[in-house]
Length: 254
Image (tube, rainbow, N blue to C red):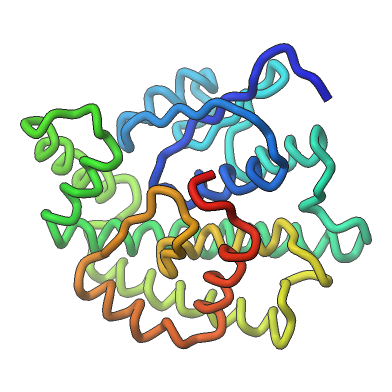
């Protein structure tokens, strides 16, 4: 299928929802441009791109339309680039895959984001490193003020400033990991016998926990408390599954 303009993905480098969209584009082998505004400063851009309908990224511009979240982006790609499919062909399996996509989006996406930003806020040095990575065009003089902006913004937007909220987020992430392992059982994939949108969603939204080598722009090392949690969870089947799915289905740097 030929389009008059090359697709453009507006995304945030360290965002797990953006990673979900990037991975789908890679699976579909869709050539596209990427534009990555600094986190926090992306909000007015997203509002402008969507005429006030959404203040979040990712956003995909394709075929004269703009799709405003990772689920809508995958649906648009599936319609335009059906091979290889991310939606199972069998109706009941497709329904199940979409149910799991929605479950991980709602139950995992916001909670792991809150947890990660909370831990980064507690470690100004790490937060500054993330800020420098997310906005490399900023000078050394502006990196620290930008890190403070990130800390304030994530506290207001995601509730990352509350220790109690972070503890609740940890419990919810662990509950989702339990659910993932139950859904998998002894299987390699969540639905049927092949990679689907359910696997892509679960693995991409857990990438901030497992930090697989293939994930682009990964945070190489998190604050000590978060790293201890990762070490404690590293032997769990669900944690290992994320790394295996990335190794098998994700191209490094794509």
